[in-house]
Length: 289
Image (cartoon, helix red, strand yellow):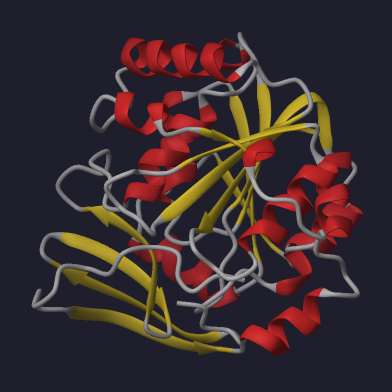
């Protein structure tokens, strides 16, 4: 339920359309520009990869997600773990996880078959990534699996689907986590129900932080959510140490981690529920920028 999810490809860069496909969720297309490959729904880019170096992040939000994954419980990196990602895009982050955590089992749920087909055809996605065509909420309601990490990165052309934005949805999601499991959520800052968004997450998860890049405001925000998270200063240090030790791509995260905030610091507001979310959509519309 957000205005956008990622920056656009460089202004003026010549676009070479590789393929497009109409879907019930909008026109899905893949194009190359400035040495990078993008997948879009309508006019909104959803994901991108640097063709010369897939570990050079195209979008800041993927760098932020890589920091968020380091908030998982100590030791998870070196043991078998199960990860669920809701929303495929071009599969770049699932490919990253499969490469850097070879012991992890990674499921990705994507509702749009056109996205799945084009992502598999045009993007480098590790064969160990298990892509499932399904509605995210319906999948969570049906699956018996328990996950160590669940990552929410589901967008239409302009917004997070309303059924994936409520107390009831996040309660269901949390029920599919192992004890001490981690949830990450990609959102966009500055939308008009931001306080309600945070209140929704706080009503489900005992603890929560968010990170963003202070040089990109408004920009993508990544929530780090759970019931057994470390204290914020401890988490800042462990993420920084692990980022360096594992040689993750991108700049040193000191500036981003210094800007990490606790969800408890947000103004109080009413959580978003299945009953109230449609009214919010009607009130604010799909484009909140």
